[in-house]
Image (tube, rainbow, N blue to C red; front, side, top):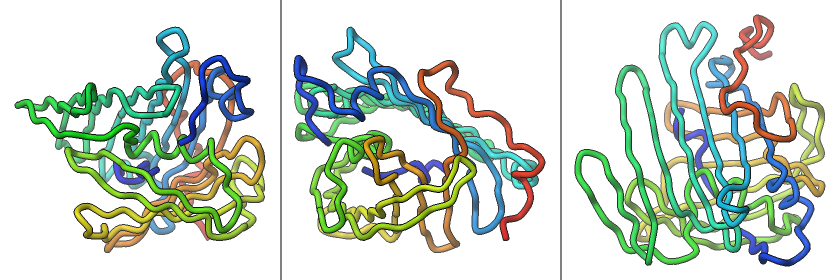
Length: 255
């Protein structure tokens, strides 16, 4: 499940008039999703963003947990909190607390002075450029860009003590139906390479084709199928990072 919420900058200069989407970030935002493996709805996720440190940075949280019938078979509860600089969206800190099928992992990564320092049982370091993004912050980073079909962007992503070259292409416009409503969207596919070798997984993100650029659907395709996060609710502000439980209707197989 942790890969779902994985993938993708815009510069919002301090003192300048905030762009519409940055105004949303400064006010706080909560996005709720249902998680589906193939056609089985088996979990929920919540992503939030809010300003911290006198509005010089944003805190982004991602919490995913299994639920429904699938949740009784596979227990997953992942929480990732990432802090990014407001002026260039570069990642400053990542805190992971993962519990998947009883396999638990806790780690903290701090990025400072061009070095990412990861602490698990031992400290490990990796030189990184600035700006550098992470699998959660890139989803928000792309929201600040011009997402007209045909546009393409390149940036560097840090994940699990590795650096990836990411090339994100805005492919086309599509209409997407979700529990939160029907949206005119643009489809983006970010390609990721580490040392010139492409990742086997394919990632697709549908953003609403308006000033909000909401991440309406996020799909990761892997060898065993696909995992999809579909928007179920949007609200301003951040009251809790925990997603509401699935309703009985939501646990029924998709048609």
